[in-house]
Image (tube, rainbow, N blue to C red; front, side, top):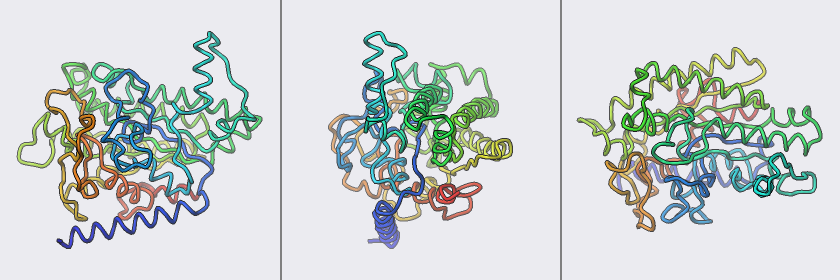
Amino acid sequence: MAWGTKKWHLVMLILNLLTIWVVHCLQKVPCYFIFGDSLYDNGNNNNLSNKTRVNYPPYGVDFPQGPTGRFTNGRNLADILAQLLGFENFIPAHAASKGDQDILKAQLLGFENFIPAHAASKGDQDILKGINYASGGAGIREETATNTLGAVISMNKQLENHQNIVSRIESILGDKESASEHLSKCIYTVGIGSNDYINNYLLPEFYDTSRQYTPEQYAIALTQQYSQQLKTLYNCGARKVALFGLGPIGCSPGSVAMYGATGSLCVDYITKDIQLFNSRLKSLVDDLNNDLKDAKFIYIDSYGILGSLLAGVDGFLVNNSPCCEVANLKMNNGVLTCIPSSKPCVTRSLRVFWDGTHPSEAANLYSAARSFTAILTSDAHPFDIHTLAEL
């Protein structure tokens, strides 16, 4: 066995032990709210009419409950961050919230504004610890993925869902002031924007954004809209917010198959496009911190962190081939998920990618660890999630 592989197994052992240790420690924050796309979705897409439902095997092959709607073989990035923050349980999907199920039933009966009683409900008490709103295919732009994948829960809709949850928290705690104090202590992570490229800008046969904007103009338009969404989140009480930059989506098996990589591991023009966005997003963090003095926003360099694995460090055996069997990537218009009940590879603890676009649990563990406690100064700006939690 090569030293690189031995080194990675040692890193994995240390990180797993760290995770186990943290789980048995006190929570570092009272609550954790999650917004984003398929990298963070833990079941919100399961009942939607779309092509991005993954509540079937081989997804979840390494997850205790099996297939749950997570777009990987085990834990996703948000799950691991919840463990590192000291939460005993994973943060529940918004779709699984008891209160929201009650609201849906009431709406079906014609009571559009019905809000159930809160105080005696354990399910409602659980929302005080946080909710996961993320949805596979979701984007900053409202039209993203809808022409190709079907129904998704966009960032705007996720914020609407959060506003309803905040109203319920106000009811539980008795007034807006108590709710604001509680929400100001929570950690919020937001990871979105990938689909605005792979399921929008890069599909000119379905979307006209590439004809409306140059890559630079598109990055500006996206970050301007994102800025308004983040200010909405701030107005809902968020004060500790970690923003995840876009990862190396041009290096994913799906992107390479669909667009071709000429002499390199990745599709170079996609890499250039998303780096324009990442650069703008990092600057946006500084702007938000200057404008919103009582809040702290941080930027996580997802591209650099995951890109280090693709560069061949830390002993990964295979850099950019999927672990599960995926249908014809070139013909699927962004649908890069595993073939149902297909047999996954046995080396998934050494793979970067699980399917055509999503990281494996091993890669998620690596990314979460460096997001939580930065190894390089470039991993997080101006500081990491661990520091954000302690503010």
